[in-house]
Length: 128
Image (cartoon, rainbow, N blue to C red; front, side, top):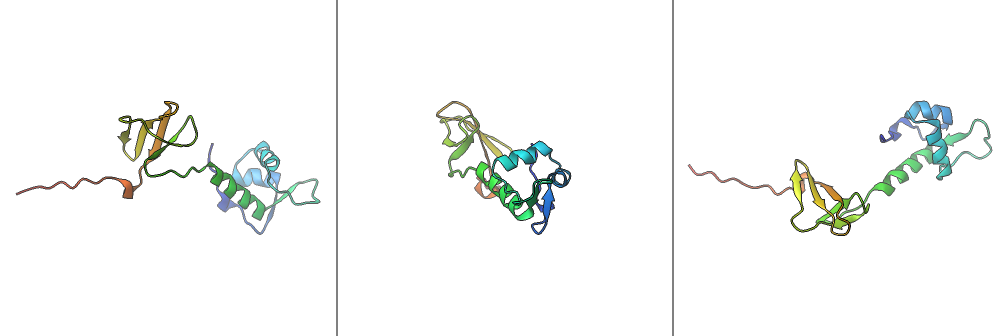
């Protein structure tokens, strides 16, 4: 599933479902599912259903924010539990810019992206 680019939507315009399918490269059923999930339609418009750009941008922003999980410094995101958990001792591995571990609660895979300011830089001292 690809992330939808909300910059393609102008908040000053209203869109029909067909215009949104072409503009956002999504299926018509996806937009109808969004309407069922709470996307506001302009009242009084039966055919074609019109959606205001402001409400669509707000809906997509809230939809993306619901997926984010705030982690503490020593926590990982568990793919099984879908929450932030602490890792089992000795199970953490570092792969490029990501740490992988095993969950304490369910023994599932856990992951965390390492930001540059969180990396432990080792200073190598060379003597001449």
